[in-house]
Length: 538
Image 1 (cartoon, helix red, strand yellow):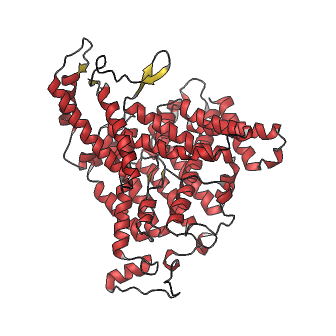
Image 2 (tube, one colour):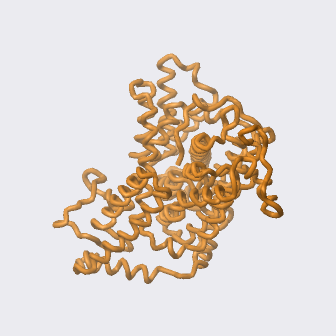
Image 3 (tube, rainbow, N blue to C red):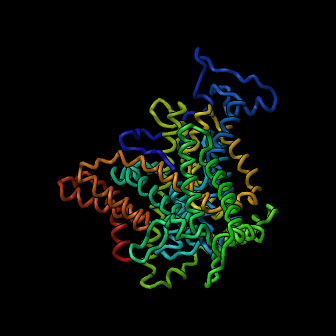
């Protein structure tokens, strides 16, 4: 998730890594002097290395801030595996470990490389893009192939950051398209959340429709083929996301986590109540009402394992290093109708670029948003150690791909820890240590139903909709590209194609309105790649 970032508030300066201001020197005392550490020995060395006292912070504040950030973003350990387990070959436990490893590596890089109070994990929205567009969607790639695309995303991001080309790519995306990406992405993942909860169901005439809540005509719960249906999951998800909104309104820290946990409890209470009602078995073997609820609990007994190391075993078999020993085998894609080497190259270029752009926008927006709230900007208005933060993000994405998870990015929930007083990398260290402990709690996480994790997806969609107010809807030249970006992303179930359609529309509008000189060379190149993708691969 990221906050909206407009081209107007992106400073022109882009300092190299060596010239960045260390966090330790960022905040001298009020009288202009720099405070010395009050600690001796090991704790004194740690304080000095992270610059805790020099930044105006202390151990207690940094620890509380780290715990706050963890509580605000730990939901990703339940949501991301839930999304990836839609791929038949993957298990919840294996993806739980992959997700945790990505979060640990990314957050520790923020702690020791960037020395900033920020945390990272598999990004929301991009994970859905990888699963539902690249693997289960029209792209026709395998899971291992998708990890190659993610790896390329990280490598490209590293190159762009190291060479300073990042700023040029960022500015090459039309402003209205950039603003629309957040909105389209939000609707996309909210739609997936509503589908996972069974609130949006298939319909032959309209393709999709709202599930019936008619208690007289609809079963309270059904269980068939390992999927829970009926009113139960949809009701839990809608009540859960409402609870998250209420908690957020009251500024409760970790509102999403509490919403997920509360929805989980409600799910089992409602299932238990249904078991008391009784029920019957339909001719097709589908269980309804009470029997369905009993089967929900029985399935837990069959699948649940108290051994946390089972998840590590699953991860080793399903995900670890798969990007290298299976990822570069594109025979599955090339066997598809109309697919060839040329279409594969175009798909690689446009999809990797789309992933990189999503990652870049997400990270830049989060860095500016979180750092501004915590007073962690330099004299030019840039986040402290920005290049190192971006490099941490890029390296974490490459490591995440090797571990088997989607793009690792800086989480906007880091702003919760910054608001709690976190100023240095020690905050990130505490968050990273919490993720290490959580890595061994996969048995507990497996108890969380998809109806509960769907609440997080829907709520993230709510948050990302805020960017819609920044689009100039009264200007047709901006409204059309923005609308097409949002519409294709959400209605067409295609994030990269949404970006491509938006850029093509923006370019055509500029040409036809006498603004061709405003189109940069990089914009032309990116748009041509997307045009070729639509013409020869889609």
